[in-house]
Image 1 (cartoon, rainbow, N blue to C red):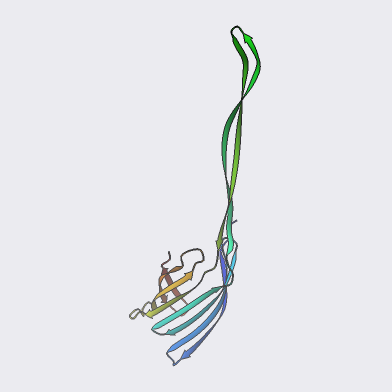
Image 2 (cartoon, rainbow, N blue to C red; image 1 turned 45 degrees about the horizontal axis):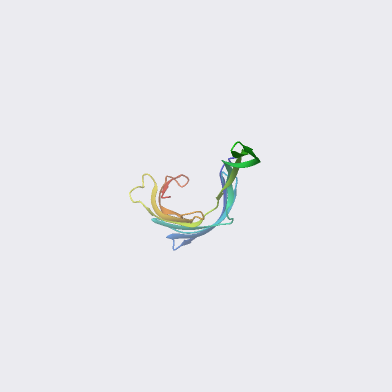
Length: 195
């Protein structure tokens, strides 16, 4: 059965204006995500930020609550058949009788053939697991000068690292473009490297 992925977040943020030029902030969020496999994962996200008119910096760390959960399982079976034929011959010796100048003994041979068939069935159980990833992301951004007609245009560069319990860790660079047209309308586009 395939489920729809959903996510909910609740958190608290604290920000303070420093020297009329910068805002420093801390935040803590509780995130819940329901995966397409029907599993729910919860995590605590902790963050810190420094915001100025021309420069922004953010750092977030994510701590998942649960371990891995079963996402899918299926079973396959293979059947091998092998046959082996064996034979055995028995001899029955009759009475010895004279016949002319010779002595004759009658011999009866009986051959018995046996076929043995062996059927071997091997069953394989495959299970797939999923887990929330512990890790962090960070970004630094600057306000682009000369773009005031459009609004506040900022470009960000960052990096992310998430520990993968099933193989290589997920890590890579990321970039983001943010355009604040009005205080209420912000357009945001992000690209990130992910193997």
